[in-house]
Amino acid sequence: MKLESQKVTIQKSAQDTFNFLTDVKNFESLMPENISKFEVLDEDKFLFALKGMPEIILKKKEAIKPNKIVLGAAGGKIDFALVGNIAAIDDNTSEVQLLFEGEFNAMMAMMIKGPISKFIDTLASNMQRAV
Image (cartoon, rainbow, N blue to C red; front, top):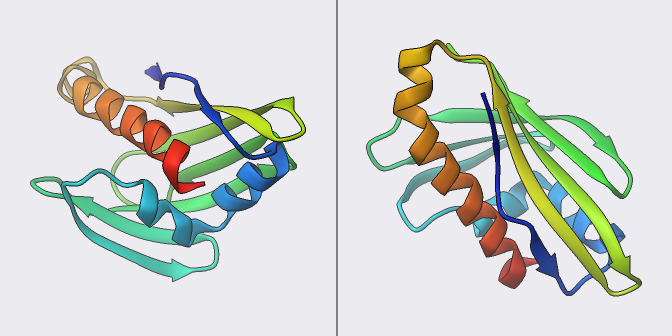
């Protein structure tokens, strides 16, 4: 299953946006309002939970300056990746799109498609004010 957020324009350079997203503690400011837990576990890993959902641990798996950041599931029963693609528009503006990629059975995919789509769109739109 592959899902894409809307593309958002950030009033920062691609490098500044990349620097923000590579610091996992900054993801707390991107989370939706219904977050019930956020905890930085180490410099590359954090845990979060949304109300009514299980805890999820994300780990920074790859960072390619200044265009791509890949976070992946760290443990748990499902394997997925959250990819941030950053494109420079000019020296002071960048565009970000989040991609969610994971392998799920048809039933699971049906159940999580809506909530995950909403989640990545919220992360992306919150970047406009947080970065």
